[in-house]
Amino acid sequence: KCEAADASAAAREEALTALRRFVDRFVSEELSSQHAATLRAQSAHELLDRFLTEAPDVLCAAAVLDPSAAVAELAGRVNSRLLGAVEAAAAEALKLRCESLLKAVEDLPRHAENFLAAASQASQEERLGDTAQRADAEPGAPSSIAAEAQALALDSSSDALSSDALGSVVEKAKPSPEAAVSVACV
Image (tube, rainbow, N blue to C red; front, side, top):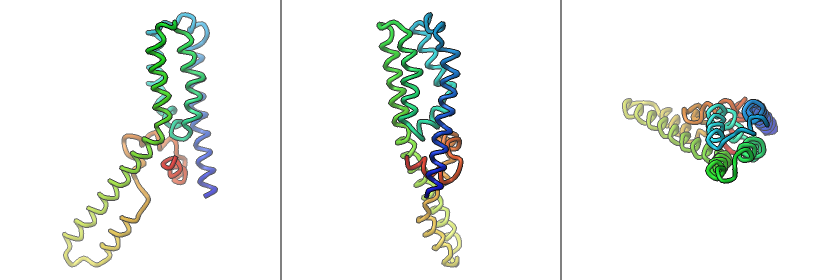
């Protein structure tokens, strides 16, 4: 249990470090004081779009492992600079987008957990169905098939972590199977 906590802490720190590095680069290249002085509302929206296009992996990994720290990094270093650079009248739509981003980052662990639980259940049901089909196809099959079906029903492991929807994010966020369990339980 202690090793899993250490792996989880290491994964969390690695994801946050990657997010901080990305934000540092983005801020220095796109939101430096000379760029911010000439930033219009449209270009601020474009910069937010560019940030979201370039950062989904590091952003999602950090959000899954430590949503509070990810929100703090975004709010303090990206959103505040974007909003501070545009005129107040033009900032309202941008402010709504920035708030929506923070809310999405904050909610990501819950969505990931729900997705992984549903994928795990579907995977187990599929494996149970395959086992039942084999038992039906082999009328004289030994009772080991029934035992296998029970084992599958009780099996808490899941290969759902490699699913298409969140697989790449979770794969990057988990250095070990123990950390993957921690991610799913966040």
